[in-house]
Image (cartoon, rainbow, N blue to C red; front, side, top):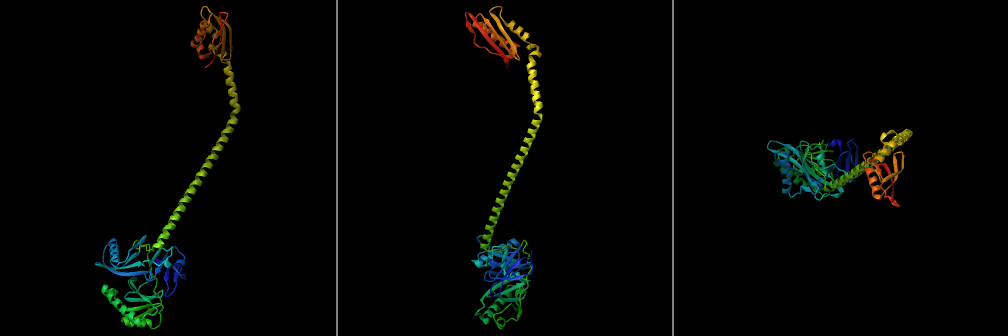
Amino acid sequence: MSSQDSTVLLPLAWEGWQLSTASGEHSRVSLPAEASRGRVLIVGLPGGACRSIGMVLPNADHSIMAAMVRAQLERLGLRADHELGPRHCWHLVAQSAQRALVSVDILADPFPEELLNLSASQYCSALRLRQMPSRRLVLMVEQGQLLAAVGLHGQLYHASLLGAVDGAEAQEWGRELRWMSLALAEEAPELSPEAILWVGESPSADFPQGLAAAAELPLEQCAELGPRDLDVDSPHWQRLLPEGVVAAQQRASRRSRTRRIASLILTLGLAAVAIAVLSLTAMEREALELQKRSEATDAEAQQVRKTAETWKQLLPALEAKQYPMQMLAEITALMPPSGIVIRRYQTRQDQVEVQGDARDAQTAVQFMEDLQKHPQLGRLQWSKPSPTVREGVAQFRTQGKPQ
């Protein structure tokens, strides 16, 4: 994505800011916080809020170059980072086999709170977003301050804030510009200015001419510098944001993550409830279906139970071993040669009842135990109540029931 695809905010010469959208619309706002966010919002800062420092470094790998830039900033007494990230980003302007020309944007410390826009995607020097002419010492007014800058290959290399325009003396600043042009020529011959380019409005008609004369350079003028196409998605493009913006965006990210987690938990809860309701509904349908099947087969089941009961009642008559006379014969065979008399023998269904007299209680008890031990009669559970002894005769009564 380039700066042409973004919403760009730039400082005006005296007061306010110009907001330029990707569709080419322009509007004016008083402070950066009033700028509405597009898909990407890039804030171009005036020289008083963002210094741009040119450096001539040995040509090296990107990671080594970053370490050299950080070392140079520390040597100049500038803090390279704030608590939540970097305060600087650097841009490679030109390079050869032996050296590299690097331009570094570094945020003011402390950063002015009135310049914060919590939705911004990137901060940089305002001239970083402009097409810079080569071999020209560019002069322009930003927020009432005079800024001198030089560029190379369309990029900003170095910028210096000279001071407030009101009450400025062209002769004094002109001499300072002369020294600046000599220093640039000493750093790299391709940076040596051949003319002064005044951009935009001037405090008076003769002010730019006085500066050019004192700087001993010819004067050129233009209304504005064209926009520069920046590849902000390049892996070498470094993100630069003030600490206040980073903190606000981190808080917003945490809130958004919390909302997403809460929404996910709610969704999962609703899904669980829905699954439970569907499962319960399916179980109810299955129970109703089973009940209908049970009702449909209830008459048949009742008939089966009735038939089984009938066969159960007929079992003594069908099974030879349970014939009443057969069982009576087996009972009689167990009786001792003397001492026991059967007074009553009765069968009904699968139950047998025997009443009799014995010469004593021991003989009666032994007889009932023999009934329980018999291989055929022992299939029944025989009761063994204590015999009743009357007039020397032990009367007993025992019942055999299926186990």
